[in-house]
Length: 104
Image (cartoon, rainbow, N blue to C red):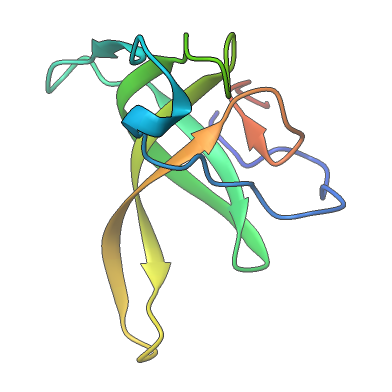
């Protein structure tokens, strides 16, 4: 059975910024998951857990974020206009507000 994680983190998920050349070279290594083979994550944002489909894993190698991993995901969020839509975001791995475990 799939379900959201059984805890509430102290803070919402921190987004990873898009890589820029001024972070230093080289750019991140990127693993793209093909359609139908995309894993899912749980992301705590907008006051609750959201199920997110992973499009890519980015391993940063630059001087600013070396060794950090971000996941580029697609998830349903409420926009500033109050309308729920599908958005692409990147979140850092290794924070309590991003979970991969399947809870029973």
